[in-house]
Length: 235
Image 1 (tube, rainbow, N blue to C red):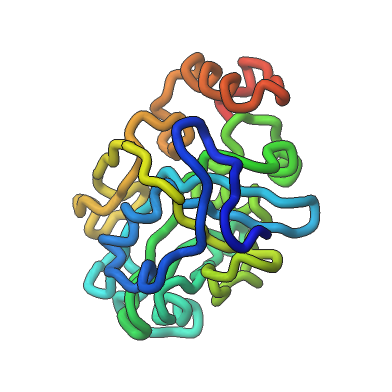
Image 2: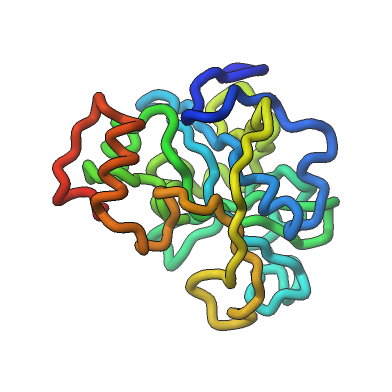
């Protein structure tokens, strides 16, 4: 993986750089919106895959919906690691979800990455997913499968821009994107807390509220080399 700047990027933005000192040491409620527009990437069997983060959720130790609410355990220990550490957990042994630890060691905060806009390796993402859909990384478990992230990545240092990843890079410029805020999705505790952050109007968000034909329009603009039948755009 490139150690400095990567040039591939959706229209309207430049390349990426390594995270500056202290980037991950802010509270999760500050890191969650800061991660929007950053690049999450892996470089492993099948080639490099990457995507721009378009949707996140923040979790803190005083949050009843957080894994850290009752303190450190073997499962959530990476959530108590220094900011910039990967916290990967399994759901019933079937799926995994990817989080970024936030703040100093011991604070028990993390940001769940919910959706990516693909940048590199779309065909490989589709192969890993086993589906030809246009949004292979639009969902917490889906993006892990698309990028090949597994439980072996729990505890990884996300600031390392070499090796198989996962790694995080920040935008080299500051695009004028609009950030939306809403309650989090799929939880029953603290369900009304406004801790979900997303790029407004982005067609790669997890919530399936985007008309199929609008997905088609954006997909064609980004990936003309990978034609997908309209019937498959809901995947």
